[in-house]
Image (tube, rainbow over all chains, first blue to last red):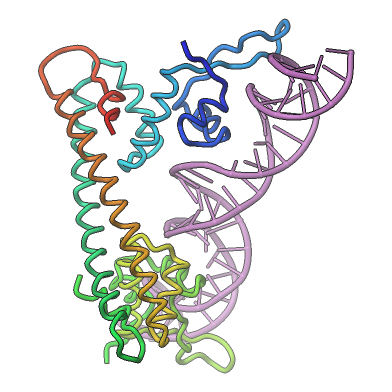
Length: 135
Length: 135
DNA sequence: ATAACATCCGTACCATGGTACGGAGTCAAG
DNA sequence: CTTGACTCCGTACCATGGTACGGATGTTAT
């Protein structure tokens, strides 16, 4: 069973150590028991595969546009029986995502107009503002 | 010739007055000469169609993922002869946009898997983390 | 000409998502 | 058994893109 330290976890998740710690503070990742440690103090926390999966999930959920607070809810839901709530959150996000994708596609079209207009050999200023006007 | 105050400009651009003022501070919008005003002080600034177009451009450029600093550069470029620079910026952003659109599409697929898995009638927890795992 | 409302501007504050610092403790190698 | 790298934790700081406050001044309707 592969166990690692916070640095290993961060590496596996493609983030920095400080970011892992930040997620812990925000309640997205747990803080395992410290191992070793003399008496009351010290010791190092060890992380396993579950933590890595969890961290990776956080990153991909972020790309889906969930905020860290929403991701915290999703993570709580993952273990709960509330399938309905999970379903609602997913569908809401799909709608938002579709809107965002449409928006970006429109922006892409504008940029293509811009690049075309400013790629030609003719002289003079490039009408940047105008290129966005037919949105 | 339709002239308006900052509140009208903000309304036309779909933003708040404070946001307009923020863009002015950031150098994205100008501050026209104050009209009226007794002696050295006071007077109200008036805005025209150009300002409205400029403000709308800022908003749509933001949806294309440009930062306010980049938008400031675009606005400066709009009047300049540097067609090449404009072209480069546009093409760079198209590449970034394509990547972002692909990312969002992948996230959408994950969410659809999630909604499917959690929409079924069966009981138990909904595997939210797992639904994102085949990315 | 006065009340009611807008503008102007500086400054402060906010949310989000981190990133950095520094002192104390821990651990493995030589 | 010391040196060097890493961990832990609290706290501070950062960038981005705003939002709010408040006093002085300007404008407009009655």
